[in-house]
Image (cartoon, rainbow, N blue to C red):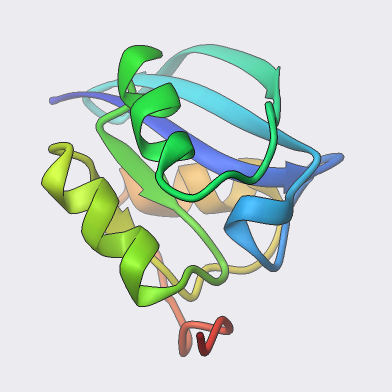
Amino acid sequence: MKKRIAIPTEGDRIAGHFGHCPEFTIVDADGNKIVGKKVLNNPGHKPGFLPIFLKEAGVNLVVAGGMGKRAQDLFINNGIEVITGAAGSVQDIVKAFLAGQLVTAENICDH
């Protein structure tokens, strides 16, 4: 299972709101192993732009703390799976996801 995962980040931790994060950490995984990682600056929060930007970067999964329903629908319509309610460090989130043990809470974005 190859995945390119985008996580909205502030440093090494997941950002609370997807569109307003300073950067995205992009993690490439093959099976349960991390095979690459890079950081992309957030090009800006413009309606409908980030799903296309991340799709063009090859992302097929977004793990976020919070994301509005409209944004989730835009990602899904672009073939990108969305998981919300994640919290913690990027490393812990990715390790838990790859092990099938990611625990999420309620989506912290309510708009």
